[in-house]
Length: 253
Length: 70
Ligand SMILES: Nc1ncnc2c1ncn2[C@@H]1O[C@H](COP(=O)(O)OP(=O)(O)OP(=O)(O)O)[C@@H](O)[C@H]1O
Ligand SMILES: [Mg+2]
Image 1 (tube, rainbow over the protein chains, first blue to last red):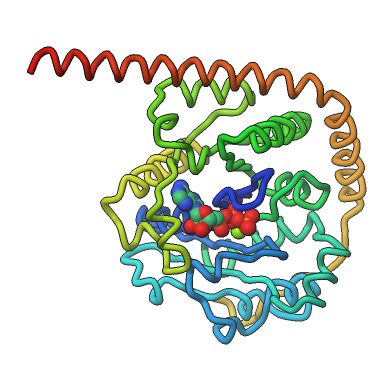
Image 2 (image 1 turned 90 degrees about the vertical axis):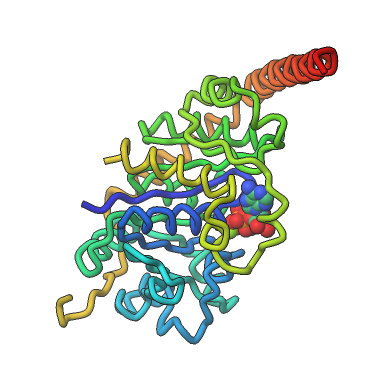
């Protein structure tokens, strides 16, 4: 059975792509097969973190969505490229051509796409998890992506705008009985040390907080140089990612 | 892996129009009580501030204690 996740945030730049890539790699270390899908059309970031070149992609997600390319031509297997010792990691990237981006933005995704792509990834590649790295914001199309996946992860920074937006998003999702979790990212270190933080945020949002990830300047500096946890297996960031993956593996079935 | 490749057939289900309508509705009603939301978030921020201050306080007291013990 494939389980699909959406990683979403109200504001941009909260760390969706970084978190997606690091969670996915951590899941492979648990011997899981994971596919990551870049749905953030206007600022795709996953391929940069994975260091995938355009020439590795035979076709794009856009071609697949329009029925013009097969799944097998879109999927890039990164397992060897990233020297992952176990599991499998796949990447599905969107087109970088402005006219193709605009077309898809205009026409929107269909709900069926999310279900179909997850199902096919299960059939063809035997994946355990599909993670959709979504476009930020609170609009119809992003919500369609969030509501069409099994579980929603909302990433949140501890600033007023993001807290407010996430609160509203959580309210909207609760109307759909969506299974949602919050991961706090880029939390100021002093705040991350407050033992009450997790419970306080869970109480405010009415959604369980399953991860508190501090702001680490090393991650910002690391930017675009591969998946952080692979380079820094002992870093506290890696341990925080591991805690989230422990939760996923043990509680989301 | 099977030999036949896997394609997606574009097109929307009837249920999708339904879901989209529900989403629009939910978005609309979420906009209406924004004042309430802001009050809640402000209250949360004050509580967080208090927690941090307490933590700071605790840390400085611990430091003083350490200094005394040295
Ligand atoms: N915990 C963290 N500590 C420090 N820097 C971080 C952390 N998480 C992410 N970053 C950095 O923040 C920047 C934005 O992250 P990322 O691109 O993953 O965000 P995003 O939500 O995908 O952005 P967008 O909305 O543009 O798609 C990157 O430079 C990344 O390295
Ligand atoms: Mg991104």
